Amino acid sequence: MALKLGRLNRGPHLPALVASSISREIAQGRLKPGDQLPSEQALATTFGVSRNVVREAIAKLRSEGHVWSKQGLGAFVAESQNALVLTIDRDTLRESGAFTDLFELRRILEVDAAALAASRRSQDDLTSMQNSLEAMTSAPYVSVQWLKKDLEFHLAIVQATNNPYMIQFLGFVSEQIWQSFLSVGGRGLDSDKMARATVAEHTSILSAIEVGNATEARAAMRRHLDSASQRLGLSTNDRERPTKTGVRQRRSEKATAAPQVGE
Image (cartoon, one colour):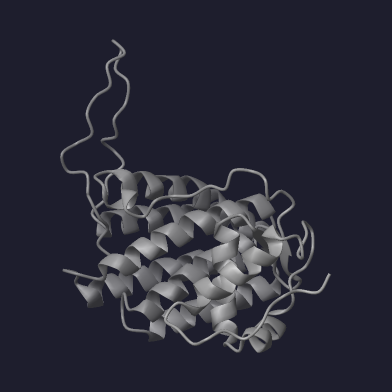
């Protein structure tokens, strides 16, 4: 069945428009579960947009559970489109403690993802990590470009696990965190000091993955995310938890309402 795709009118939200067009093809059955999407270049030509716009659109579709990606092969329609798609209301992430909860989930998953990446990474995976880190380092601290390349670095690590469920789930979580970062900017940060610390942490993670040291990759990612949590003003040590009497203790009043960018 021929796809009904065409050039888009220029606008401020091109990635969302591309993602919506592809979602419509999936919903109307012209793209079926297991089908491979056209290449980035083919989609870019069809829609009349850049490949970067297509990449962002695919990332959005992936975070919503419509497609999954395999490096070197491309993007594929997810097998089940009837399953409940995991969503997170970004307004909820502005509430006290909600962003901390999401970051805590990311930490649990991404620490082990780094260890898996060290054991399974390909040369292409390493090149993606290296390129993202270099681009991030050359960008102004906590600028949109910095944040994009930071996200790409972490997603390249997840991609290297070769676990499609981890890729899809962590891709979704990371996308929500990244969008929250973009919404608040880098207010009140010691940019030079935090930039140096952040780059050093990413470099340590990459070095461990490059040499295939899973133990050190896990430790380096844990150190990075713990430090990032502190830079963001988050705390996961005073979580609400059951007492011996079954009464739940209250979260500390220090819980943050919105993130301060500085990962």
